[in-house]
Amino acid sequence: MLPQGTAIFQVRGACRLAIGVGPVRVSLAAVTPDSLRVMTANLWSWHCEPSGLADVLRDQDPDVLAVQELHWGCVEVIKHHFPHNHLDPHHETLGTGIAARRAFAVERLPVTYRGGWIAKLDSAAWPHLPSPIEVVNVHFANPVGWPWTNSYRVRRRQLDVVAAHISSTRSRTVVVGDFNASPAWPVYREMARRMTDSAVEAGTVLRTWRFRGMTPPLLRIDHAFVKDARGVRTWTVEVPGADHLALVADIAFS
Image 1 (spheres, rainbow, N blue to C red):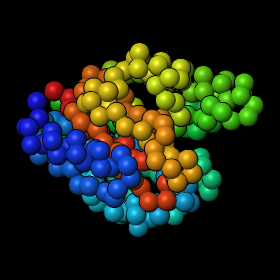
Image 2: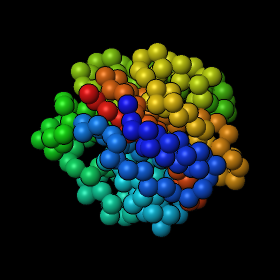
Image 3: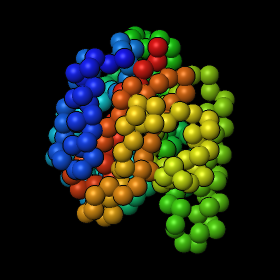
């Protein structure tokens, strides 16, 4: 259980971030020694402000960063903050990447349309972790893209690949990203059947998507699912220029 003062701070911080107020630094002090801070952010391609992203990364200080809709303009910011990275930017919305403060091995997850990445963290570079950890970055196709029947088939194929990997890997696993699925949608329900939603477990369920970045958060479509791990706390933070709030999760493996 978190110390009482920390829990109160976290809840207040989460509420502040949920309505789009600027970045808040959240301390790792109350998290277990074997924890990992993972951040996922859809950057909305060229709309994302590099200087704003730099501020968010400095203030949130994640161990692992997963990004979707990565444009060339934010690549150097991520590289500056993370000495270890695998970034695949694109001039539209197909760019993805994963980065970390320590070394990791990377594998491609052969997901249709928008490829996924698997970051493999081992004890040689991450001695505080109890066993090998995989952090998987995914970006599901938009379910309302026309024609809808094609969008459904693409999403079904994407889900099949992700589900197969979850079933086959022996590592403790964190799957993060833009699922383009609220809890009412089949993709979310299928993932929740196989893994644990860290936001639900932590008790901090917050919406992440804003219409063209102009509205208050409307939908919760960015998620951090865990297997053989637990969500200690989660919160959202505004990334200047992006239409999604970043989701940050402190995940424990004890």
